[in-house]
Length: 273
Picture 1: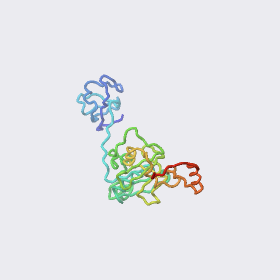
Picture 2: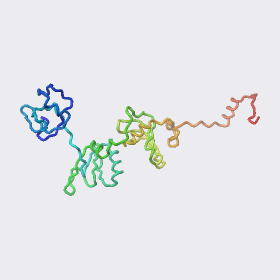
Picture 3: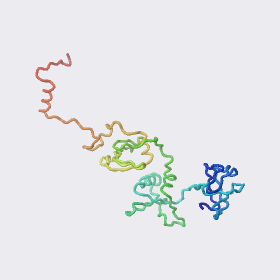
Picture 4: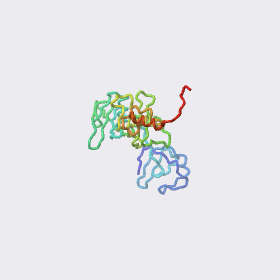
């Protein structure tokens, strides 16, 4: 059986009166609890039945009639989170922005390509400081309760990046940048990057990645660049998106072109009449 005495459960909202669930009939006395949270008051393992504190008629309930209720998560005072190579940028971005040096990072493990971040600074999950352990939180909990990704810029529905296109993001920031998409997996963007605010040697980077949700969403909502003239000065010579300059002609080639356009005997009118 799934539940024990004292557990909070939710009565399924799609139960049908008169229908049997695990050979137990859902009757009229049970209907008022549809969709509501209730407390397990008794467990009868021999027959696979429960009784609910809120069901005054004391009817029997089964696992099929009930759903688990997720307990409300409270972010621990001291926590640590394990991340993979693909996720660590978002974690470090938040830490550097919000905490300064008030955290500690354990180096990546070469074997499983993970690292561990502890907040506030001192140790890692299994260590103890001042009699209080650091509590491990999941990466999903970190994103929801620390990064608060649910508050990020909404993305237009059914919109995704076009590979090979340039996008612009952080347009209201001094560190705005351009992104040319090579690959996008739904959360991390891989490709070329131009950041005009960086030193000249670092303005253009051929291989980079981003997982800042707000920046990615902003670039998606703006859409791909239709005019690449604004990035020409930052592209290296020979880049596929670099505009090709008109080739310079030699004196002999210029003379031959003039003769082709204006052969001997061509009549023309002076511009001043």
